[in-house]
Amino acid sequence: MFSILGDNTRLQIVTLLMHRDANVGEIASELNMTQSAISHQLRILRDAQILKNSKIGRKVIYSINDDHVMTIINEGLKHMAH
Image 1 (tube, rainbow, N blue to C red):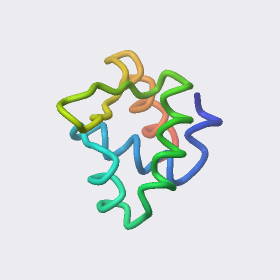
Image 2 (image 1 turned 30 degrees about the horizontal axis):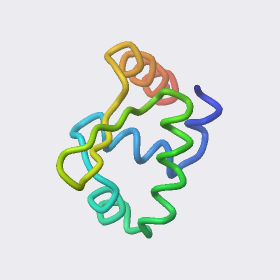
Image 3 (image 1 turned 180 degrees about the vertical axis):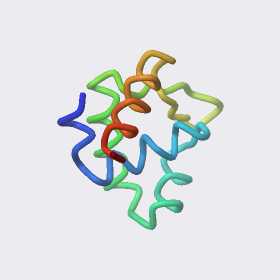
Image 4 (image 1 turned 60 degrees about the vertical axis):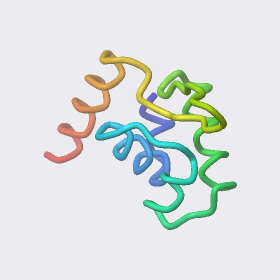
């Protein structure tokens, strides 16, 4: 998991999604990147079971997979801050 989060873009995506769920367009806008670039990173995070997605109408909403993943990420971020 930590090797996947070693990429700055993926870490930014996860940090954003720790605060709120979002779709590709919202994430791309927030990070000032193309939707294509964000989609690529989201697929990697989803395949690693860090993120999950759900469809609401025509939009796919991404969120952190579960509280366990959130705890691991928070602990990793705390460790990196020291």
